[in-house]
Image 1 (cartoon, rainbow, N blue to C red):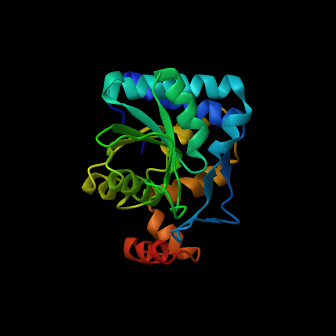
Image 2 (cartoon, rainbow, N blue to C red; image 1 turned 180 degrees about the vertical axis):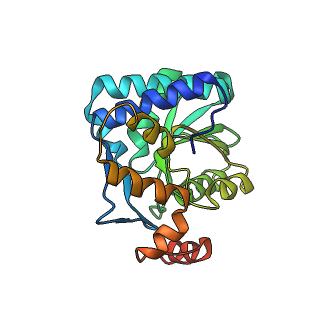
Image 3 (cartoon, one colour; image 1 turned 120 degrees about the vertical axis):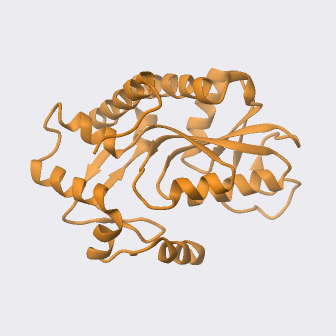
Length: 240
């Protein structure tokens, strides 16, 4: 299985981003000791997009591709304010806002308890069209919380952008779509696997196990002690 892309440009952007992430060692494969996400899913793969902030040339290229993607799929003049999600989305939101010459704000994970927009720092006037920015998304839970906070404050939030989208956990894309939130991303795990065919970044055994996970993440998670359904993930996410 390979990633599906809207155009040749989107595919090239995805593979370029994947190569950069592999080069800066932001990609982690650990089948023997799986990662556990907040929602309870177990995964043999983890992406550390925060590493991008330490590599100026890498982040410049990724942000260049990100702004081009936004322009192609949303429109440069269709965004009034760029909003970073606390905390990982703040630097990415700032770089994108700067390139788009747009105002920037950020949204907190929880209300701070006072002020008109208790979760929002910066000016986001009522009726403004916002672009919610984070580094990545797994199951979309944080995007929904941030989008709801923006909408509760009177802003319009129809689009969210991330560098990396896991693209494997069931229900994530549909959940965002039901909320009227369009997800735009540069690359997924399928793009990383495609690039891994070019160079031996990881052992064949590790790649084989990752492919098994990507083809059936629910069964893989269950077999390794994680949640085994979307409903279980929703309950755990709600508790946490």
